[in-house]
Amino acid sequence: MKEYNFYAFINRMRYIIRWGLMKNTEKETLKEHSFDVAVIAHGLCLIGNKYFGKNYDIKEILCYALYHDSGEIITGDLPTPVKYLDKDISEKYKEIENLATKKLLNALPDEMKEEFEDIFFLENKESKRIVKAADKISALIKCTQEISAGNKDFENAYEGTLKSIKEMNMEEVDFYLEHFLPPFSKNLDQISL
Image (cartoon, rainbow, N blue to C red):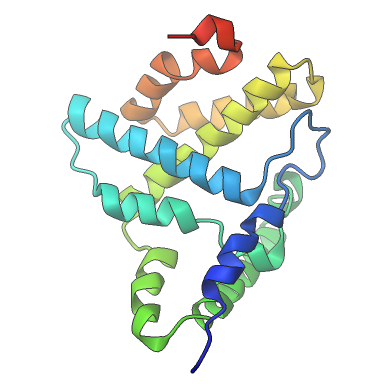
């Protein structure tokens, strides 16, 4: 009986620590980040569909969000300043991520590979854009929480991330930032029901 390592690799997301170059008051794993991105992406889809007449494919977006950084199980999390230092590094890292993702696909039975290829190498640009926005909002929330805990290391990251989010010019994102982001800087007593 053949064994497949795919889900054992996915489970190892919990060992990949994000924000490696930054002082953190609380560590964030790739597994936590993927869940956060999926939750935020779901919220963005609902906002877009309910308030702005969009027709987002929530299932497709949630699947992509859950697995959007899976290649980092193999590559680790390359810090953003390094990843985007110059065009050559960015392109090479993208190639490395794609190779890593293909390695993960090879840890699946043939009958499941096509389904995961569609998730890992999603072609729907609108769906990818929602997940990219959710990914940035997740980073902004991390920055917000670190700053609220007195960690000044995240102040520049907050400003840069907020700027890049606003440049996306997405109404569902603006709605999320206005209505759902502020409570992330509050303590439990302030957000209690």
